[in-house]
Amino acid sequence: MKEKNLQLVDQIMTQLQKVQDPELLVDVVNLGLIYGIDIEGSHATVKMTLTISGCPLSSYLQDQIEKAVLQVDGIDKVDVKLVWYPVWSPEKMTQAAKKQLGMLDNEQAIDQEEEIEATEEKEKIIDFSVPIKKLASQYPDFIQIMYDCGFTRIKIPGLLSTVGRVMTIPLGAQAMHLDLAKIKKAFEDKGYKVIDG
Image (cartoon, rainbow, N blue to C red; front, side, top):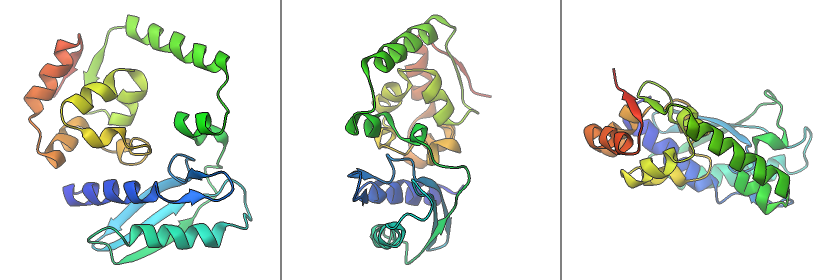
């Protein structure tokens, strides 16, 4: 994916966070409805699903998504492509969305904390060829370290589940004009072993 396209996808995801499902009052990104964004020139194709098939809000959401994406400089045509596979389920929602909808109970919060502690005991390895989404799900402090290195957009909800599936640390550093050696050192300072080749 070209550097310019990565930046456009990032900007589109930011705009899509302003599009709320009017019934749930949670944006389409945090609901996990956005499955992908393809860009060819100034034409963006947004692949999305709905919480239920035959949802009466599909045309409303489609219209709102098109308007939001057209706010991004460099995009002058948008197609919204509805897909039904993989089937949407509440697991696709971000923690923020689940919390907003009151779906996280104390037991889940405790399970997450235990999972984090178990991960911290294993050897921590950052492989520069692995997509950032996978690294973020493996290591609880990954997002904060990346943020501190200048990847400020990593905290945008939905970024990891879209761009993060294909973006590696070197690709991201190139797109954001950040020094890869400093990023490597930041992880090593936190006790990580870095594989960069």
